[in-house]
Image 1 (cartoon, helix red, strand yellow):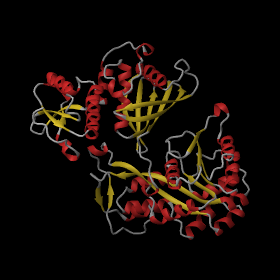
Image 2 (cartoon, rainbow, N blue to C red; image 1 turned 90 degrees about the vertical axis):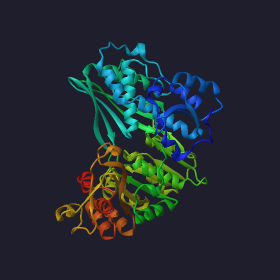
Image 3 (cartoon, one colour; image 1 turned 120 degrees about the vertical axis):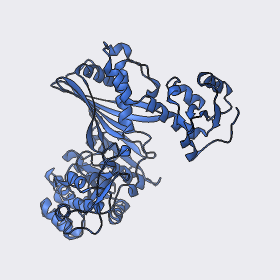
Image 4 (spheres, rainbow, N blue to C red; image 1 turned 30 degrees about the vertical axis):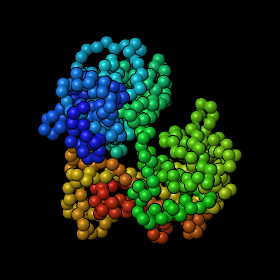
Amino acid sequence: MTGASKPRKGTEMAEFIPETSLVGKIPITYARKNLLLPCRTASGELVLVSGNPGAREAIDEMRFLAGPARVVPAAGEEILPLIDAAYERVQAPEREIAEGLSGEWDIDVAATIEETKDLLDSPDEAPVIRFVHSVLFRAIRERSSDIHFEPYEKELVVRNRVDGILYPMVTAPRKWHAPAVSRVKVMAGLDIAERRLPQDGRIRIRLGGKEIDIRVSTVPTSFGERAVLRILDRTHILLGLTDLGLADSDLASLERFLARSNGILLVTGPTGSGKTTTLYAALRRLDSGTKNIITIEDPVEYQIRGIGQIQVNPKIQLTFAGGLRSILRQDPDIIMVGEIRDAETAEIAIQASLTGHLVLSTLHTNDSASAVTRLVDMGIEPFLVASSLSGVIAQRLVRRLCPECKVPYEPGAGESRSIGLSASPSVPFYRPAGCAKCLNTGYAGRTGLYEILPADEAIRSMILTRADADGIRALAVSRGMRTILAAGAEKVAEGVTSVEEVLRVTQED
């Protein structure tokens, strides 16, 4: 092992570039097992980066394949991500898809399906499997939250949702639709023979050592089954309250809500506005080890250690209402109900909050004031709403401008007024440009806009008189509540997002 030295760590590993011509000939399982990867230095020298320099047999085998090469020791925790990244690049989605679509094959899905422990270990599978796996590779690499398989008369369109926006990924010939959807259904344990009814399932895979859960939903359409895959990265680090993008005053208000021992806190907003993320952050804040916290969700997206989480299952009559009744017999201190969908669930949740429990839940309304009137419209007595409600949080998610390519400019008066500013600001606004790091979208990641309505005495009085949402909203604003649009204007002034993005998520309000 001539030339071996102490293990390289940190930024020193960046000087090594994986030798793709050799990586493609070595199974990823072999590379990961032996912590060995052929690389080139900046000067072009071939080296073997090894996390186990004592593995002489594996190093000799690699030298037999690669030729004379110097061994460079590396820490195991440093080389594993390098190996995974190298194999993901070698099995690039674009190349896999191009190979899959360029040939003419008769595909027998049932005869070719064989599950693998890690998707990166399956470069030689049947074309349809390579195609589906390639779609998964690219979606996960691009931080997609959803994948859509959409059949049309003459083509199959695959689209990714990244930061809340759908982007076309690939367009395939129509003949690829049935095999691709069948492959997804087999992976999810669904009935591939049933194409007339909607089905739901789940896939659990590993990709480069990362645990990924994928929720699958299929529905019949005029041109065949449409499949949507929701990607849930199990290695994803759940956010804390300070990571949500809350202003200091809003964070203080939320902390006051959570400090209470009873009452109900509602988080509202449309689908995909980050309500569940906010609730999970709140639960992590509340989980002190001295309280019994139980949730009922549909689905349980992320497991939180120390918290009892129940999955809704309508097939066995385990609904939100039924599960909530059972939870109340489990001596809970804090209850989280994934969503209040009907009057029965709302009534049980409110009764629980009145009997010494802190209840967290979500509701589908456009703003905070509408949540109050929605509960009354469901049939809940106004005095129950007024006495149980601690507060309402309405929220939206906006895309963050890419810090690498955002461009400053001076807005006009009309543009400033569109987000509630009366005059041109003294600081520049920024607009998206697009670069390789943000996939040429100009945006990378998302942050939240929040509108927090505390149920103080004035608001409770209006609830008792069955006031409408506009009246409650006007009173709350007069008492200092910051609207979602105002929160968006603040993010624009800080250079976090753009005017167009704020208007996109608030224009329905």
